[in-house]
Length: 492
Image (cartoon, rainbow, N blue to C red; front, side):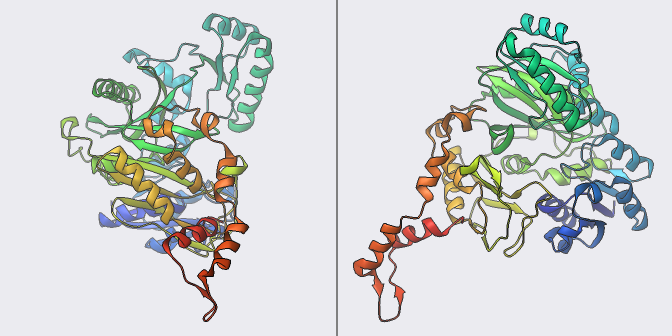
């Protein structure tokens, strides 16, 4: 494998390019017109324009990407995450063209991409599953009977897709029919597939996932867990590894289940098995057949470069370690730094990065694809970067995250940095006693507004108190004054 095309953009494309370069592999970037000056374009050995900014005219053009590979003698495609990464048809076409797809085969993607097919595949391994149906339901009367038998509250879920689309919580039978119709309609609109199924609604779950690696020689290992319970709109914002609540026994049990899920679909490569956890019990949720956004926290506690392992597996190598070789070392936390306003229901806040200064120092990692002066385009996911901190224990990782957030200076757009600071100072998070409803239970937007608002009276008092040196028209700044000014300068 001498040349890889990265069928993606932004921070993940740059992340893959770096690992490939360290392996002596040439890289090809593809880009849209909106990403012409992006870092992944500058850092790749070659770069090819795909088309206009819209994804369906650029990054989702699978046939065009395969054609580029043929023209440039590319050996393999790495899809990153999102876009074509879980597109079974694209994986199939890639292999048919004689190009290696760095990921599982089309069958595994297909099976695990459909939640009902996934449930059916893992049945023979006795994987714990949430009570409910394992078949698609379209008959509303029958669905209502099943809901009654399962017991309210229940969850109606789209069989295809994720991200909270096509999902409805139903508290009682009176609203069941209305919610069922809404779920089917939303699933059709989002995924082109109106299939839904019913599960018992777990009231206060934690979202815990297990990272696995599987080679082409039958070896499968799990690289421990990631806690992903802090979410907004059913999408993750903060992840950590390991979880604050799992015992070693539970960790091993969940790890075994995760490797069995991989066996159930003959999985090859890096994948993630997601579980709901509640009061000592866990249930299989789904499998993500790709690299996860939050993979850095696993890399930091294991010392393993997951992208390099993906590439090695794709070119037929055996895993160079077994389960007994893997150990958890320290603790890592990731904050997804989105161009979103936490005080306004996390709505996207697109604009120019007028100031962009990354935090530095021991135990701080920033995976990003932007520089100062660049625009955050409206066409793609609003994530600016992933801020990851590592410590010898959870307390050190949290303290380091707080310091890193304070150092991270972004001006021009609102970001999730203040929300991250709020979480790091929240007692529920600090104690480890939280679940997927953290935002609803604890986060009050007005707390950030009050904390970050400009206090005009305080500023006036600083100047009137003699701190302003009239001889040179510059403030004589003490440490406390610096804090007063930086609070209203940053993240605006």
